[in-house]
Length: 638
Image 1 (spheres, rainbow, N blue to C red):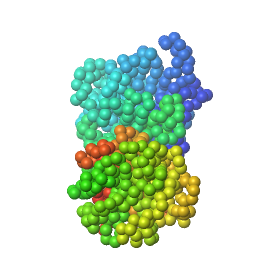
Image 2 (image 1 turned 90 degrees about the vertical axis):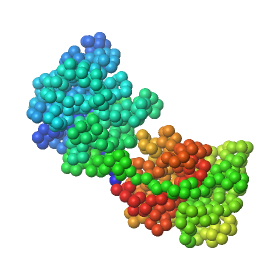
Image 3 (image 1 turned 45 degrees about the vertical axis):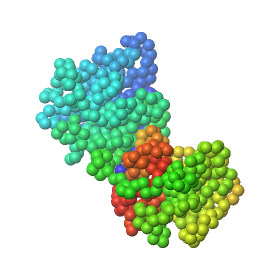
Image 4 (image 1 turned 60 degrees about the vertical axis):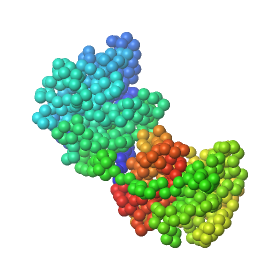
């Protein structure tokens, strides 16, 4: 399973208030190895000081160099590249360093105009043979560009660079350029000709026009292709919901314009305090990478203030990237009979919609309890059974559960109300059911009831009086009971807010004003398919490797998808792994269209002969089913 770990002692470099040239920020570091030493080149931001060209006080960026014996613990650093030429007089930023032949090539952003304008933001190059002094400096691009890096070896006999053109005149374009000799790199004639054909050299990594991309680290060669770590900024033009993420792609070894595979979501977003708070909050930006044994170190800037480090297994990362190519994409298999339950116009109580089913397997039958909606938007629960998990053998002509209490009785004529989204658990001789109770006026709350398994199987609907177990004035939904005790206590999953919460309680005898605790257990992930909110699908199932819990996740665009979590057998509150990609997402017409578009919403799943049957609402209108083998589902977590 793909796991990326931040270095525990991040940041690895911090600003030094005693050193004026790096007093405000040290970030966007790029390492290169020389012998047994690691040299980290980084952007350093000075204190404000009088700038003679500008005529006032301003911060200026230099490029510093810090040295380490292990690539982790670096000394305080020295200035290495400073603004000297007319084309860089307002700053040198964001270095990318590569060794090829006997020289080290350090590309950087050169700032020549203030106030900053695109035409004054270009690529510069410093060349050194010993990393002690610079022997040459050149302005590279005659047009707006940043983030250039040299491939560490020739490709088809030519030097090759990757760069981001038009970074400050979106859309930015990550592109490739080839050179017969190094001196061509600073030839205006070369770049003029190249720029006229820029689209022929562009790598199409941008998914949406409202996003922004930029080269991160110099490419790393693997046997599968060139590994490119790059910046993907979602909602770039929006200050309120902009997300700085790190993504990765595998490019063809012979023609790096060809994308062999790429991530569809970030491998990192800002999470830690040093990433969320700094000179410019909520930013991470990849700038360098190195391999060590079977691990990849990713060097990145955090909040435009710090140099940081993260690490991941190379094989795990490459497998993760390939999984987005479709070659290893795993999704549940929908039943060809879908939808398996549809509204019945002859039953007023379920004439408008049937959806969001809970389920359990017992006595050779799959028992399905589903939410049913009438024309006046009152929700009750219907019941159906299936011997093979797909074909419906029996469907109750009457609801098996209806609103009985004031907290679920309609207060807003014509509005939604009633009993919603049942999730059921069998423990011993009883069937426990949690559901959302809603009166159409007050916030939804969790209701709890139960029935003996004997009465349920005999269709004697002697449900216990329902009680509310979540506090008033808090929106709380998506609750279910773990099928057993954990450390002598009952474990309840629920959702107060946007997270999946857990509560451990000594018994199920909820007394007056005894409410569920909110212990955040699983959070949405920024930039992912489950970025807005998450909620459990139903009680987890036990496997040889752990408990598997399915959950729904909602994206920023409001699309409902399904993912999975693997939990420890010994302690189910401990999460072992979580799927990076959804295992089910809206694709079929009955999922993409309905009362609510683009919804797959499971509330129950169970196992028949090593196959998991998942039951879900499609478009808040119908009941559908999907299946997957247990071993295949476990493979998702590898």
